Length: 270
Image 1 (cartoon, rainbow, N blue to C red):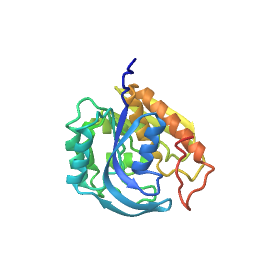
Image 2 (spheres, one colour):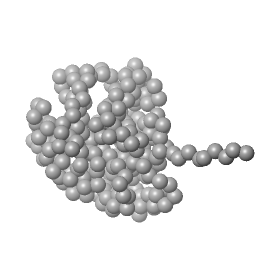
Image 3 (cartoon, rainbow, N blue to C red):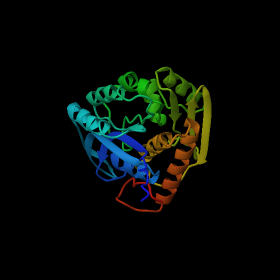
């Protein structure tokens, strides 16, 4: 009798907070990972009470329990890529930084979550410098939006021109991140212009804005999609281009749907 060789899963570990409404956080990450044909693993850093209208409350998990979750997974299963989202506390950031040191050659995508869509702090205010110090050296890619770029780079306002975006990306690269994706979805002229700095070169991805209120979890989705493509062996520019296309398609598919009374989710399984 012929015995088939077992196939290996391509795994992506998301380290992030939980969103009970399912639009962002761990829930959005796992949907994205599944849609990419990968196997999702998760380590929770915090639990939130939130819905489409905003974050009501957050409960950071103890750093010892974050460590136990990671150790249980990494001791049993291979990890092909890591996506980091909401950390919730400085203790969690320091713990995750230490855990990443145990991974050798595994792509790490850091979604630099500082605030929710509604403006609620999801990382201790005024500690962007500590995020840079602790996590940038472990990141293959960081994915700040324009407000996060300004906060992380200590700018008085969001970068507006092509030159300002590239200058900010270079500065963040100098702080330790191998590659930087400045996401332009918060731009004001009807275009979404994402700028990738990789291997000393700039790659721009420009697309018309999709008019929809259903944008909850866009950053989570985008960063998870990139992690999936890196886990599958894509190069960085190709991984980002494919992730941008997937995120746009998920936005478009969910644009006409209605869930809740605020910013609804994307449609990940279009």
